[in-house]
Length: 305
Image 1 (cartoon, rainbow, N blue to C red):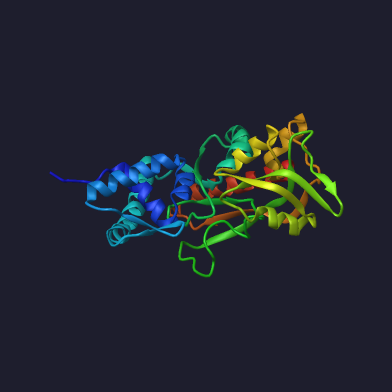
Image 2 (cartoon, helix red, strand yellow):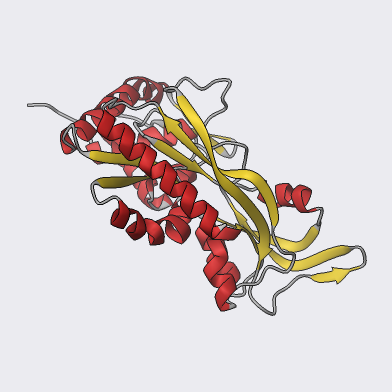
């Protein structure tokens, strides 16, 4: 009889080891920090010793953890590929689309019924993306919109070792500071000031990037970080402070008056990008499905920018 480790804890370990952070792993996997920590502790106990050790404010793999990471990554990659192959027939038109949870919730998912109405034969499988995600996990499309976070989603292209891809511009983007009515920043001398600035913990540089883009310096008495961008936007709508947003993410809130954009939005030409990854299934049906998805995303971007 095989004596296997707790299998449910392995993705938590792999993500934490790759990202170097329990918080980042929890965000990528859609779990809480405490749930990931509990799984890591359980896994370490089962394998006879700790897998991580604290180094300053971060985590570092122990020798036991490094050994597990070395063998586990290829196993999970192969398992993900095999499960995808088994779940879908060869002629099934299935597109795996990686996108941030906030963009999926606020913009993409509400529009998917329109895609399925036009392409009932295609299934879009959503996968969560983020700044730390590498591209080892099989995927057909990566959707990237946050130019305040960085020029591209995924790893630095100089060190990228994943499958070939084509980058396609879907449309422009625009970024602005948003807050609830009555919570707009105040002008103090030559500067703007606010009580609380809301920060997405995964992209703490966004305020500085927006300041360079807009030419506006917004001073804050204090900052508060949220693990997910959508939580920062909800906090802004609740009147707690001011957040940064791409315009598509807050269009409905702006229209309803739930949020205002006191400085407007600054555009970035070609800011909405799609990375079309070389297909693991080279069949014509699969290529047609990916192409249909890209064309539809471009159409949606043009009509909702």
